[in-house]
Each structure stands twice: as C-alpha cells, then as structure tokens.
Amino acid sequence: SGAVGLETAVVEMVPAQLSISVPGDTATVSLRPNSGGAEIDLLSLFASVDTSFFSVVDQDRNQPGIQPFRMNSLLTGLVLRDTLLVGADSLNAGNYLLDLIYYDQADTGLLDGEITLAEFQVVSRDTVGTSAVTIDHVGNRQSAFYCDGEVVTLIPPQTGMVISTLPR
Image 1 (cartoon, rainbow, N blue to C red):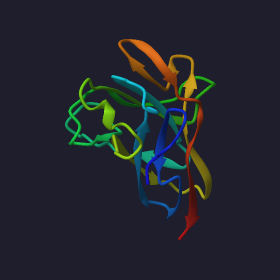
Image 2 (cartoon, rainbow, N blue to C red; image 1 turned 135 degrees about the vertical axis):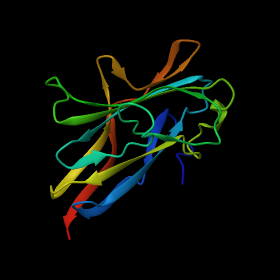
Image 3 (tube, rainbow, N blue to C red; image 1 turned 60 degrees about the horizontal axis):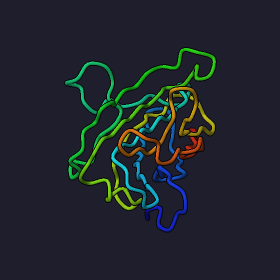
Image 4 (cartoon, rainbow, N blue to C red; image 1 turned 45 degrees about the vertical axis):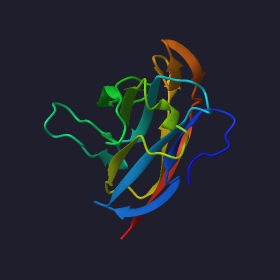
C-alpha cells in the first residue's frame, strides 16, 4: 500500500525490506512519491546503491549510458534526468548514484503515495550481508518537491529500503 496519511512529503520505496540470494538475483524497486498534498510540478530524487552489493539494470539500452529508471507509462510528464553515475568523491565513493528529475504540470496530483512513478532494478553480486538504498540530500544532490522553480519541501536523507543478500 502507498504512503497514505503522511504529514510530510516522502518518496516511498516498495518493498521497504527484501531478501535475495547471491549472486545474480534481481530485485525490482518501485518509487511512490507522496507530495503530502502540496501543489508541485517537479520532483528531484537522488538515491545511492552500494556497488559492492549490486549492479543496476539499464532500462533503456537504446540510450547512451545507463538509465536506471523505468517510468510509469500512464504518466505524461517529462523525465529531465535519468542517469546512473559511480560516486567519485569521498562522500559517495563506492556507490551508484541514481538521479531522477521528473517534471509534470498535469498529473502531479497523482503523486499521492498510491501510484508508482518509476521502478529500478538491482542485481546481486557475490557480497553477502545487508545494504540500504538511501535517499540522498547532500550538496547539489538534494531530493525535493518543487513548484514554479521554488522548493516546496525537501525530502530528508533516509533509508529508502534495506536489502539482505543471502547465500544460495
């Protein structure tokens, strides 16, 4: 179920907890933004995934680079950024950086925590243990909801989901 009744804006990752086997199992993660009822027209989501636990699946092999997000085809907005980078500085070394910037003037009322905006997939590597997918809020990677170019609400840094990787 979605993020009904939340008092603050969030991007829920579904499932919140997951166990998969190593190596080679694939997990699909759904993103369900909830603007908390605020009027918005843009969402910036910045997330991190540990490179020692997972690789990230390219959702559009026809585009250069890796596009980690598969967008909900029922929504009519524009994806302004859909990229995967490998962290290079001390703040994010060892992480894949998943960046999604979504602009929509018509359907943002649907971003109420009930509808999936996008999905991404990770594939387990050989590492056994527990890892988190985090929502980032550092430097210019600030997850937030916007309206008319102004920040409506910042999405605080948090653990989006926890994935346990287990031996077969």
